[in-house]
Amino acid sequence: MKWVTIILLILLATLQYRLWFGKNSITDFVRLKQEVDTQVTLNSNLRQRNNLLKADIHDLKIGLEAAEERARNELGLIKEGETFYRILPTEN
Image (cartoon, rainbow, N blue to C red; front, side):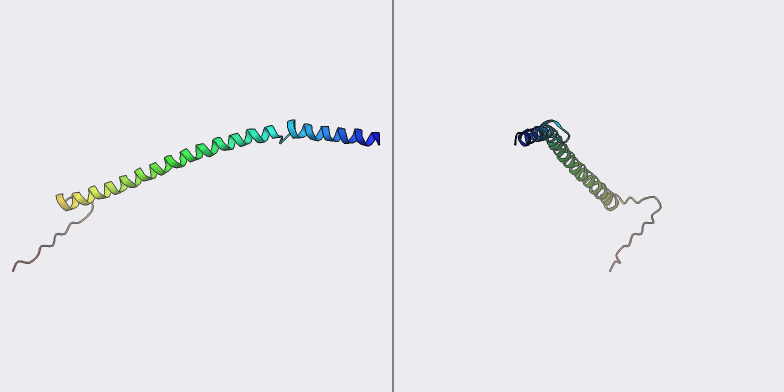
């Protein structure tokens, strides 16, 4: 009976050592959890920045199209290589 108790105590001590200090221990878990939280925050900031850049790109594209359309209608400008046709209404 005495040997069984000693073996169980040694087994318990070994398992406790691995739990607290071994590979994939509680300290490793806490460290990795902090790294994941930091990465999630960083990813959120980058996602927000990307969304702002996409909105800027969209605004620039629409802005260029609007400026081009205005130049065509109000100033009669045409692009290089295009042919401009003006159709005048008939006078009665």
